[in-house]
Length: 266
Image 1 (cartoon, rainbow, N blue to C red):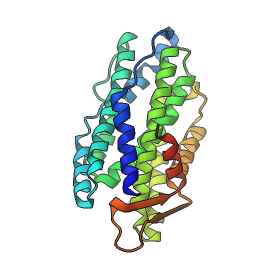
Image 2 (cartoon, rainbow, N blue to C red):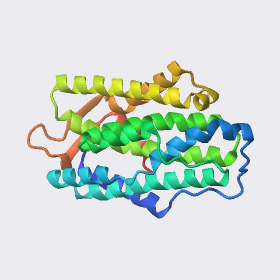
Image 3 (cartoon, rainbow, N blue to C red):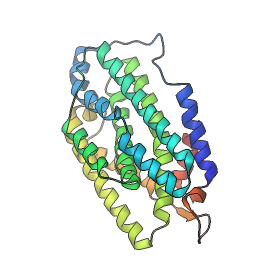
Image 4 (cartoon, one colour):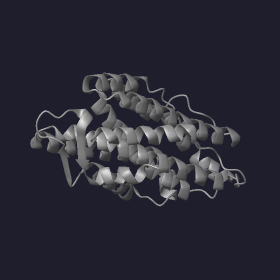
């Protein structure tokens, strides 16, 4: 990944910070009682997952940026965390307007946060991108499961932002992975695919009512999550700008993830 890529992502996140998403005026906000019962617990869990303060991620980014001379990375991560917190605020506002109780804790969210605290930047990114890839599929199912226009538009906005997040994270992970020997890369791909599949299975079990209403069975949900992983993180070709002496500030990546990331930047 070249230095200019970091500048592009910085511009992207700064633009979104200056023009934050909000609920459009004039949309129907009718949520039927049966819809409310269907989504209440599920949307509460995802709202809780969006509102992390991100201190562990920011510290890991600061260490990595200092060691690899990528000062823009810290600001990108700060803006990324702020965008995730705005997602949480939008979901919270919707829940409060419809008298859906906020969650203070959930065991799946607790497990994710515990693992992230033990991780360096690369492992943290693998966990984060897994959650966001699955979240994209979930929010699309949630959109399909309701007739509430406000919630449908909210889901579309969250998916749009998450696609850009995944584009950035996949570029960074592919560049990190490219510096390793081929057998190590293969093992990492297998481990991450297994993690994605296992996590998607847990999400299916804990959110199956919404996912079924959105058109997913257990197998199709896991299959779609894995296909999204393959699109972003199983590249056609990933190479370093220089085969000797290049550092993380001068990466070049040619991959499906990189092309998707370029489409995600607006």
